[in-house]
Image 1: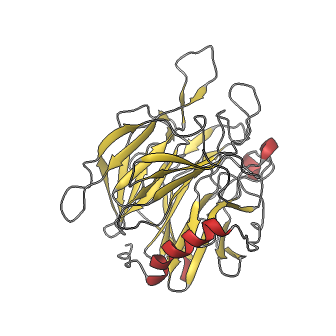
Image 2: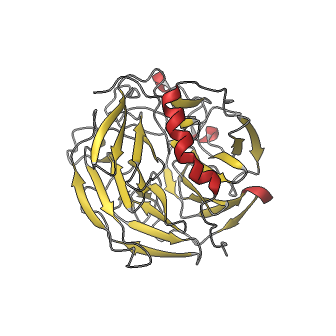
Length: 368
């Protein structure tokens, strides 16, 4: 059974001040690239008294076919900027579009999908839990509705929300509206209020305080004569009750105005430090043209990563542009990691759909 998560440590609290300084400093300390180029890999950051650790699990390599999907796992000490290889994720095949969340000294790895030799996709219901200090995994309770390309985010130092995503297999093959909540203390699942918007996959967002924000993603085109999938422009905010005062499954959803830039697929997103008056949820990259696992656009055109980074301020409930012209934009991301070294992107696809091993720091730049 999963152990009860520990409380936020002084190291995590200090992140607020350190991150604010680093975002404006503009000085990038050297961070080693991943041991191998990877895209659509599940990534997470853990904060504790020993510092910040960055994790990468599975993903697809430069071959961009079933043989290029890996079960590999890596851990970086953010102070040294060096990677260590860890025990591979359990299973006979690797996966794409899984989601990872670090919480309570463990990393929870949800779902994802595998490819067969003909390119057929199967969504997994697995929940693998990695224990970094012991370099081992154990199985959590399976996801009730299997998903890949979903949004996963921690809440109240105990729960993990798994929002939307694609559920593909013999009995189901569609984007789903489900909001599934995993209780890490009880190894149990609950279903929460679904969003009433368009079900999407490859969307991006995070939870900060009691606020969920997610944007975009892709949905199935109702016009059979057009591309199979289209980018969604919908942006949503959800308010979660305090677990000490109410039922966290009762989410109040509100539609938000469009964010800066075009609607995009597989943007990277992450939550910044929360202060007494709120904080920011950051977004970077992605592409306006939904694509398959190999980076090929469903409309036949070549997708390219967006150079725009933006944020949602949970205090003012408004959007702001962080940078309109990122020098090294990427797409095919699973998360944007908010650390004392800044906003980090781990792997992904560069321009030309090139799978990269780079760890990129997203910096502030020209704004509107």
